[in-house]
Length: 95
Image (cartoon, rainbow, N blue to C red; front, side, top):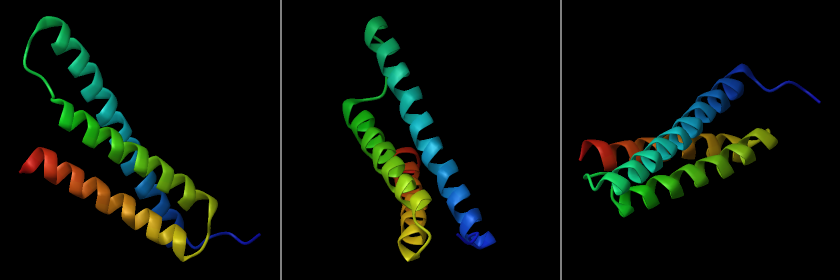
């Protein structure tokens, strides 16, 4: 088996970091939602939780596919994860 190019490893590493960040953000939002539900405070809504949860799950699935392959599909999966992270962060946090 040949070693992947440095650019491929870098891209997969970057997309793995983005996928992990989406999972961590979802966990933080879930804990915040649980705490604010118990205290009656305002917190993240159901739409935000569902959107972040679906994005995190999709990112993890795509990252597993990117890590197992060494072709153009791996590159597309990695780029898709980065695009998904940008869309989620801009859609929920900037606008």
